[in-house]
Length: 144
Image 1 (tube, rainbow, N blue to C red):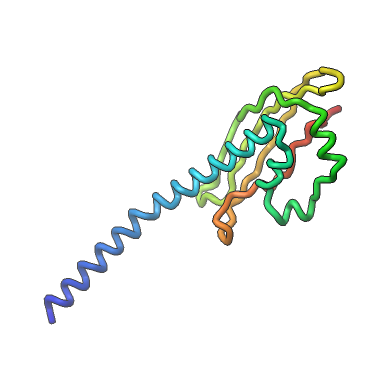
Image 2: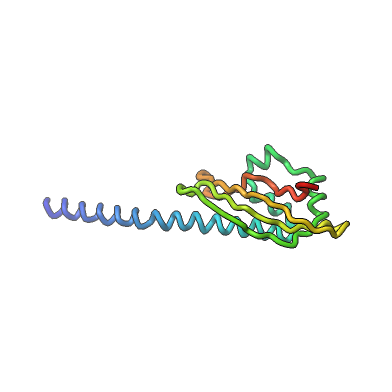
């Protein structure tokens, strides 16, 4: 009886250690996924795949702020020349991440180049186990 109790306590201790060891790995996995989504977003914007970029915007935000066909046509009128991260931060719980971005934009018709600043806000969705952008598409015409 005593041996069974000792064995049970040992098994519980090992399980507790495994849970403690797994927590940072889960957090790392979450941060790795954030980096992957941010990389996919910046790549889509850099290459002018604005429709593809829309797939990384949180579905509820997309529904509340739909991008019209006319707006997508405006995005086709620009060429992205640079996409630079200037600053980034994440909360301690890992549920919100911010990135300040500087985007180089050339108007395809006038060949005029300008720089636009944009702040990405990413939120972790526990239900879908995914990071979603909740700041919408960058306003490439800010100040025009």
